[in-house]
Image 1 (cartoon, rainbow, N blue to C red):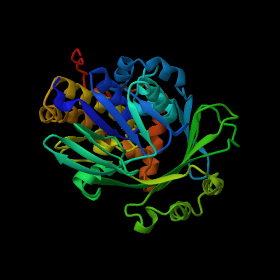
Image 2: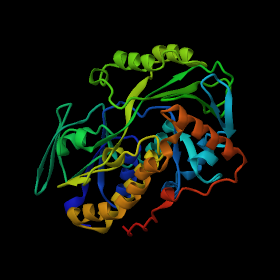
Image 3: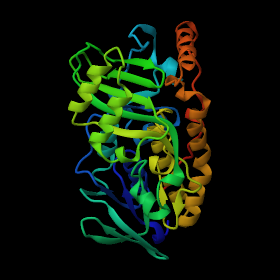
Image 4: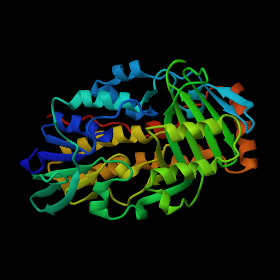
Length: 397
């Protein structure tokens, strides 16, 4: 390792950022993480860790903690437009995951495990963010929002699908954003339904409402509203009230418990709305700056692979930097080794993953018939994309 690539600034402290920091620190880099929030978020909607990402977690030593945090949902129950039961099936049957190995944890439990693994070894700058980047042959001059200025050998954007780091280097999001035709809202609400470790999903053409109980009957629920909208109004993208109104309008006249969910959405203090889409880029690097996780290749929640791609991508980027003293060679290796895995998982959306949210009556009828068949069919084999990459051993320090 030469001194050329010893200091690294990582923007974003959710999943990809701390995972990358862990591996870089292990291999001699001096790592700084800048995060606009003041602390990691607790709780959060459940996320999946599958396939190759399980091995990353195991090599990091956080797998036992994640197993303890495993939600272990017992069933997913699908309802028709009137609230009648269509089918009730085990979650792994639908996801194509490996029962007893692949995991589902609250997002906050994963971020807590990652932070615990790095908090004593890397520098954290919280309540701050990158303002500008100025690259030179010798480093990256960074101006921070709070007024500080520092120079780093490398900078990595791990700041999510709407990455500010990406916009500074590559321009507006538009050319890289692949919309998938849906919009969603997630929030928490009281558990007035007596649900425990299960998910209940209501569907009508172009609309879905779900209640997810990750704990017992006395724990709060995660609510989810998803609807088909190829071109959402631009005015709603940054206005929380306009976003809530957009969701309410989309579910006007819906049956089952949906009106109550809309009321709960308006009362929630953790409402998050966004469009459903992917980030697809021809390159993930520019000079001395690289992107990892959702900032580079968000697959969308429809694939269930966002967290897994973040963990694997962080491992592969660290491996490339440790194995290649020159950052240009390292970034080339990162893209070459990781892009096929990313492509396979993003392509899940083209292979029927979005079928859970049909937009027509005929498609909904077909999906319901498929769900009923799953009740009596043997458990499916794991989806090949989940384990489509064999992790290389990291070079010795």
